[in-house]
Length: 86
Image (cartoon, rainbow, N blue to C red):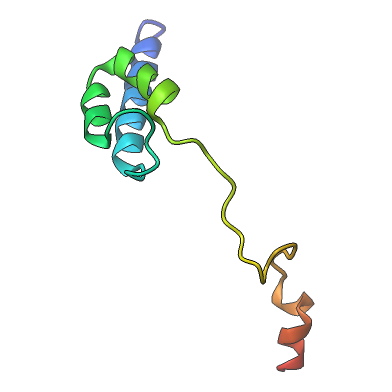
């Protein structure tokens, strides 16, 4: 079983990299085109590492609109506007 663990980890990372590449936004992919990155990720170890280091889109904060800036979601029973409508 100990011999299979590295193989399972490599296969899981490879599959995750391929799905992540396929689901990534085309405009957010860094470096090469999305198609090129997908073809690179076909190489199990090298392609996976290259995708995670150089091609994967960077995570950014979600955009905020001006009206909800500084507000956080509130439960309905804590929201004064909701309670007024009851």
